[in-house]
Image (tube, rainbow, N blue to C red; front, side, top):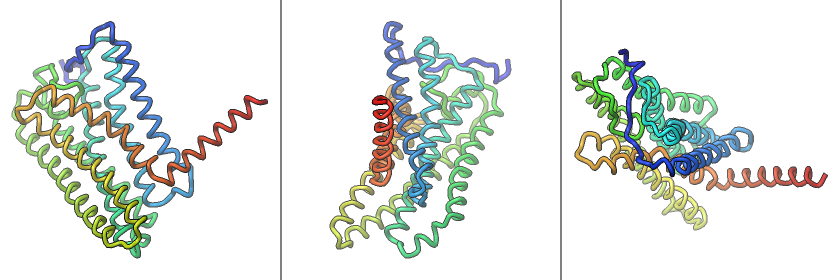
Length: 313
């Protein structure tokens, strides 16, 4: 049997048939909430010319990436709950795993570049506009996605050369560590490469964010304007907490497959990475931003007014 036609089985959620439709409804509503929040931020930035600035040009990549991560998990998870089946084809499993890892890597790269953008805007304001030109922005955005696709894509190209000799995945969704456990051949090169790109992406992101936010914090402390200092500290503090939590959970999720960790804890943390950031990111990085929030409220008010006018007519 070829790898592409092989059927794999994932861990079950152990949801009773009587509760399966409620669980599926909750999953569907969560997925719809993620898509709605992220599409709101994406369309608000894309359709409003006043938001066509470097900060928002980088931010628009975050909802795209979050929707990739949510789409990697929820459709198949909801189908599994409704059908009470944990089966997945090999090809679908590889696609899901690829999307999951593109999402995780993309989150690190995008948040890192966004942090550096804030560093330039706050700590190097005189050079900001000369550095963050439209041309440079295009190269930066293309570079972000290229780095993510090349590093993650090469990881899965190395994995596809193996024949799987087992069919039982140790997770609720497909990912590289779980697939590697199904291979009976020597996977040393894959393991080393996987650890190298994990440490490279996580280490580079963490060092860059600590450097940028450290300088931002110092600049804010030295700023004599209390309102500006308070706003910058509040915004950067929230962003830093979100980034550190995501960094630690993704690192734990990767290393937990190589350490003696409770399977329940590993699965819980793994699923939380694909659920909570896509919900929180559009709220924290998008709607919590004054400019985006005001645009969303104005658009909502205009839409409500049009509906009332039609109803009156």
